Structure formats: C-alpha cells, structure tokens
Image 1 (cartoon, protein in one colour):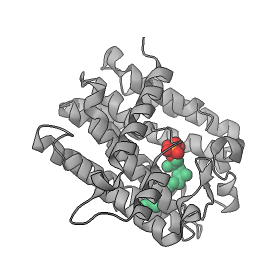
Image 2: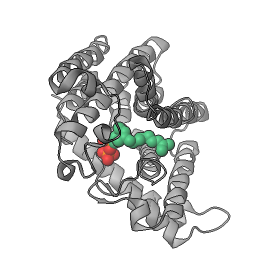
Image 3: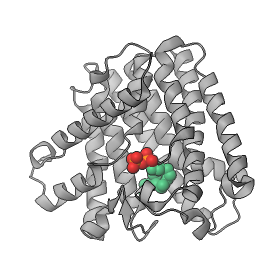
Length: 300
Ligand code: GRG
C-alpha cells in the first residue's frame, strides 16, 4: 500500500539534504568562486520549509516505470531550484512585495533586492547544470530531453510567461479563459514539467507520456485552485506567508466567482479528472493519485 506521508517526508528529507550538499561555494564554483553572501542568500531561499512537491511528482511519475527514487533526485533538485528561484523573485517589491515566505523573512528582506535577484538567477542557472551533469542520467539524450522540458516549463511559454500575464491581469479585464491560461502557465507549467521529467527518466512511450501530461495539467489546476482557496481560508501563520492577497489585489480567481464552497466542489471534480487520467497505470501510479488528492486536502 502506498503511504503518502512516508513517501513525501522521505522525499522532502532527500531534497533538503541534496540542496544543502549542492548549494555550497565549492559545488557552485566555475571560473571563479561565488561570494559567501550569494551562496548564503541562495541557501536562505532554498533550504528549510518547502513542501518539495515538485521533486515528489518527478519521483512518483518515474516510479510508474520502476525507476528507483535515488535516480530521480538530481532532476527533482533541478526543478526545486527553479521553484525556489521563482519564489525569491516573486516576493520582490517589483512583483508581489512579500516580507514572509515559509515562515521566515523573504530573501530580499534578509539580504537586499540586488542579492535576492542574483540568488534567484544563480539557482535558475544551477538547475540546468544539475540536469546536464552525467550524475543526473547516464544517457545524454535523456539529459537533453530533461533540459528541454524544464526550459519549456520554466520559460517565456511557461512559468515566466504566466507571471508576465498575471502582472498584466492586475490591470483588470481578464476573461475566465485568460485567467485559466495565465494560471496554467504560471503555476501549472512547472508541475507539468515535473511529471513529464519523471516520465522521461522512465523512458515513457508517447501514449503514456500523453496520459501523464493530461494528469499533470489537471493536477496543476487543482494545485492552483487549492492555493486560491487557502488564500481566503487559511491564516498567514499556517501558510508561513501573507494571505488574503488575491482580494487585496482584486484578482479574478475562481474562488471570487464561485465562492469557497463552489470552488471546493470544482476542486473535487478536477482531482477526479486528474486521477481518471491514470487509469491504465495500475498500482504503480498510486503515488500520483495520492498527490492529486493531497492537493485538494492540503492545509498549507
Ligand atoms: C517570478 C519568474 C517568476 C515566477 C513566479 C511561482 C510563481 C511564479 C509565483 C508564486 C506566487 C504563487 C503563490 C503562486 C501560487 C502557486 C505557488 C507556486 C505556490 C507556492 O508553491 P508551494 O505551495 O510552496 O509548493 P513551497 O513553499 O511548499 O515550496
């Protein structure tokens, strides 16, 4: 029987240890050695407190193809570095202007804006170095596919592009479809890339990859909707970051349109849709099923 609590805690421990091991001056050095302040700011933004859900999705998707969890770690670390960079930049005064993240001061509060920008940049860059290293996968063709997948999910057609659309949307006038597209890019694209990278590590055939992509897109919508509900219902203390931000910014979320109860019903339907995409995979997909259900029940 798949045990979500045990697997997610084990994954979070492995990610924490891996990030701590790779985010050091020695590991990050190139033609020169990075300044201590840069390494410290990167560690502040990456270590301690994240749920590490994206590396968990990599691990769970790869498990369908019997890839051992240890063989998914470099890929999981790469996607987590991208996620942490996005949070550091999102918290900056020029974007969401947040003081707290994961229960601690945001990187620009603990250091300064320029250091936070550079810490995010360096995490972004190092993510691709993790994937290019042969410790990630012995086959260079697989490594190139991982790089392409992560670049596509994180870049202008994915997360960064979604953030741009979100900023434009704050002026108002987005249709529900435009909101969905923005959210699928801003939050969904990295979740989609995580699942697909797990499948790529497992050598998934096109049909399996497309079923997993459909799962990931629905799971991404569920994750975002749960985040919107929590923004209304959870306390800042539980979340470790400010809440009520969507209403403050007059954001047109599904929660604003349907109310909390209506949004919860929609969330349950989306989770069923995600789980339905896994019907051909049998018990090896229990991890992905459990994570989709967790997205609907999470309290932070
Ligand atoms: C600045 C390039 C750039 C992109 C920002 C990720 C993002 C795009 C913005 C974050 C704003 C936000 C709160 C989006 C909602 C979904 C989300 C990414 C929540 C945080 O992810 P969790 O819950 O966080 O996985 P932890 O802390 O557990 O890692």
